Amino acid sequence: MSEPTELEHFWAVIPAGGAGTRLWPLSRQGSPKFLHDLTGEGRTLIQATRDRLAPLVEERMLVITGEAHRDEVARQLPELPADSLVAEPSARDSMAAIGLAAALLEVRDPDAVMGSFAADHVIPATEAFHAAAATAVAAAREGWLVTIGIEPTHPATGFGYIRVGESLEDVPGANVVEEFVEKPTVEVAAVYVAGGYRWNAGMFVARPGVLLDLLAEQDQAFAAALRGIAADPSTLAQVWPTLPKIAVDHAVAEPAAAAGRVAVVPGAFAWDDIGDFGSLHALVSDEDPVAVVGQRELVRSVDASGLVVPASGRLVAVVGLEDVVVVDTGDAVLVTTLARAQDVKSIVAALKEDGHESLT
Image (cartoon, rainbow, N blue to C red):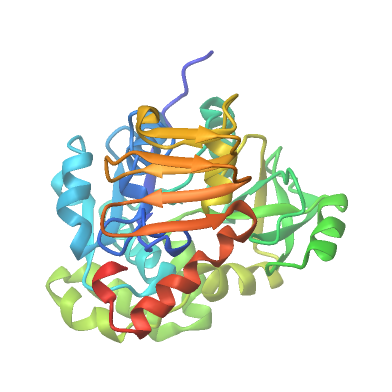
């Protein structure tokens, strides 16, 4: 395996937010999934993300996380320079977080190219990821907003899709994005997969000024506010609550694609965002019918299959149940099936409505 080449002036931005409600009660507002080792490899998801990006950027990283998670992120990433950890005063969705990083980097390094890669994604094939990132950086240097599109393995309904257009003449291995499309039905997803669409994994690479200028074309005040914070960081607490809550896909990527200004690099590697316990089961399952995240010695099963997370340290026994999910965190126990894993978020919503915010 060849050693990856550091990419000059390339900065990794790691948005570390969200509560991962479909992984409740393991993932909570106060301890979201990126702070957990869900793969059993001894590294949390954010640590694995840092490990994957470090060969390309060395210390050129910015982690954008919530104020409540600042100390734990700093503890898990002791290699991260103090000025590379930025805490949001409140959650304002991905455009504010990634846009703030762009504004800070525009000031810090005028030659910067930034790549935004979520803290909670799993990518085992690091070498293939590095190759895709290098191509994306090359396209970004030419002024494109670039995304890395994942080759679908099945007609998933939980992801958005990218319609791939013609090849870029100036960047081999990259194509024009014709359109971003929303999460489809199973039938439509099957058509997308057959038609060569890619999954939208939310990975974006661009020169900071390009990203902010594209935002300014849609919302001039938003871009100006982000640049204002970068010029005077002491205004962060005052200005931040006034920023729109909108995802980078809707704020920038979709309108830019409609104008023919977005490129896609095919990602020839396995990828998972561990969106629910079904995807976690697929990631960690082995020859044992009951997959375990945590201490396997705490799980006993008879004529059963599925996933067990004995996070409380108590013994969990499962008898005669197929495709079951059992998650025990001590203060809460979840029992569902792999088929209904997407519905776990409804429990979190109900708990909030009932005033049990502390459990979410």
